Image (cartoon, rainbow, N blue to C red; front, side, top):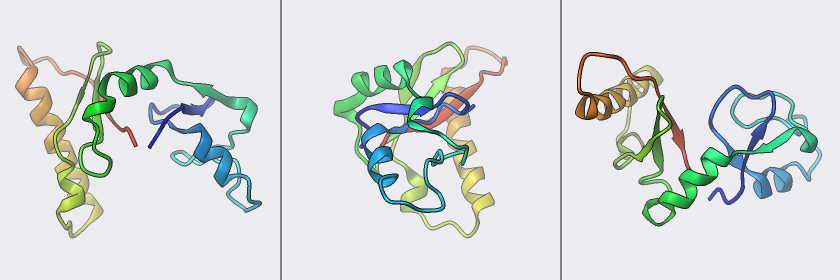
Length: 130
């Protein structure tokens, strides 16, 4: 579970990783040492930044998060967020990555469609909290 959400200064994604786990896994010398677990960019300890948005989401939703079952959050362009329903993809076997991606897109569209007042598009990004 993420306790202290961090990411590299040069990372362009919202997804964070846990500071303690990052330091622990990089304690052992290996070829993939000091790389962002999401984008693979080199991230030294000095390049780590604490993400206040991610921390606020964790603080707000901590008691509602169920690791591995309900741990995806939809972050909207206006800065609001909402915890999504059960992670259906983890409980359903998918024949391909493309099919899994299509299923995820459908879930996001359902969330957007249920809250949208009109035809305007809303940018969202789904991030995993654990």
